[in-house]
Image (cartoon, rainbow, N blue to C red; front, side, top):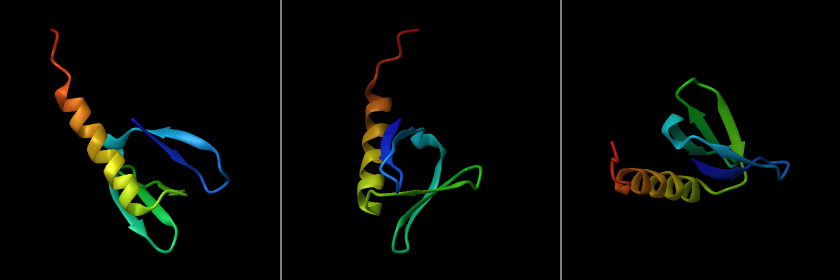
Length: 65
């Protein structure tokens, strides 16, 4: 999960596993696997970095089962 900010300044949490792609046009658009689009204040590179960090953290957690 990553924290992003809507254009109105409202923070929200997004499941980064649902990101299909991120575009800069000039606002940053995050398109989800459901084809829903979310426009955020963060720059495209910041969204990508947060998603990559999330995936790295997710894969570093040991499986306790």
